[in-house]
Image (cartoon, rainbow, N blue to C red; front, side, top):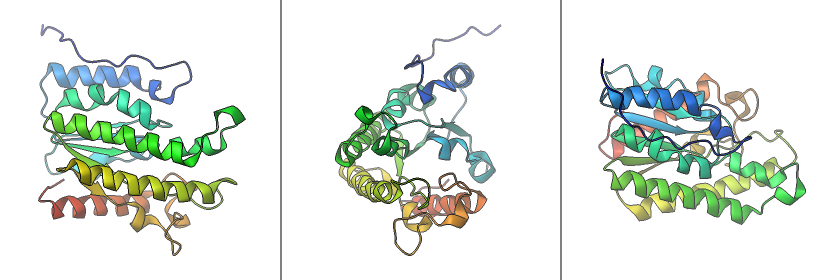
Length: 234
């Protein structure tokens, strides 16, 4: 019987933290990949948009080994904390990072004292993603930073404010990626918005946030085309 190896586990972050929802499952899956030294080509890490994306159907049919480590409701600070476990130890060639929209719901947190200002939210997301970029590069992994997606205008009363903040976050993510050098920034946002350049096209998401197949088709095309511009395949 093959001996079990020690694998990196980030532990649990709190009793009501979204990142804990799939922790046990991902730890088991990571252990198998590490123990059997499975060559991983691409890891996708993010929130429910990533979790709901059947990335193997889009990118795993050419012999590449693709891993999805999305968690519904996740925010940038917890994606950063689990990055070592869910990305680095799997040693992929590419780490596709898309995180931050759930941070923006702190604009209208139901507890007034937990609400945060747009600049604070923006700076937190950008700094967390910048840290993941640095970790990936130190490990010889190409970081692929993807823009935060906009939402449809009727999600809630703060949607206009949120979509303006998302545009600011994306500008910061682009700058952080360029400043690091060697990474790739993928602009999903520009391809998913309507005429105003801020709002998600309603036909792409039935609930105003989570994409349907047409939205994912657009994201897949954007990812392939942008990587190709940098001499990378997916």
